[in-house]
Length: 346
Image 1 (tube, rainbow, N blue to C red):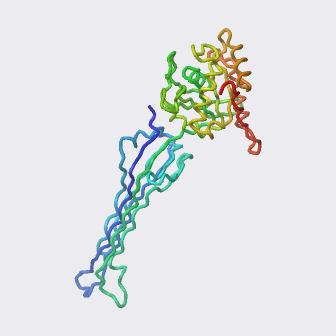
Image 2: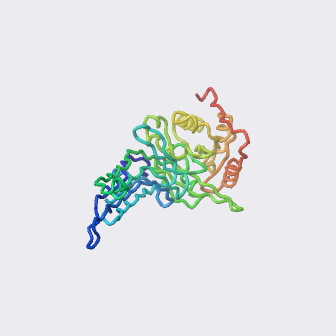
Image 3: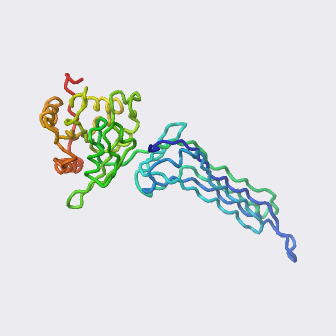
């Protein structure tokens, strides 16, 4: 399973203490103070990396501590600064303060780097306190402690299009036909156990990222099936492709009822997610009687229904061009509002 949540404790390094020292050299009487400053403690940084895909490294190790600064030394030598600690996180990671729940940063760009715990400052040595009226200072400053905090990490994949539907609706097959992704495909429910990303390439150097998530079933919001926690991975998407099986279907669930089941689960998870632009797609239309079922689905929900067959390739080009058209909408265009569910399906 993909690890998309973790809680970690981070602590920056302590600043080194200043040094109290006096020159003691042959032929140099009355040597003055020469204690150096302590080094600064290392800070903790969060860095977004494309090469990192999950939060697995942070689910097994909860404490991340940067190096302390070294104390100052005689001969006005400053202590060495503590080495900074970089936490390499997947692109799309949200960093929250665990105690307050405040979002600190959304790492949505590759190689983005922010400081999440600042290192302590090194203390001044006694040479810093020397003056004309205070020529033999015997005081030095201690280094300040580094910042420390508990953080909650939450990964949300970055994709343009999210594919939703019941288990075995054909989501993984569709992703494998449109991209070079290789999701697991089988003839039993819940073959997809973790979100999968694929890059769909179109003519004229056009491309978009599509996310396939595990199938939803009725009651997913309360933990049925695989639950609905993985829906966070399509919260960033612009478009939802709602795949409805009109070929094999389900013994006790007609296409329009299957559509309503998914819509209900989306609404219960997040009104914002449910309000995203939606393209309804009837899958497995190479089966006898599927076209009639697709017609009935469109009439029942009051929406246009695209028809595809991932096995034969029917309708795939029309689907990708439709997706691209929606992705390329001008910013000033009015949003596509979801069509209300007909009363008889509520």
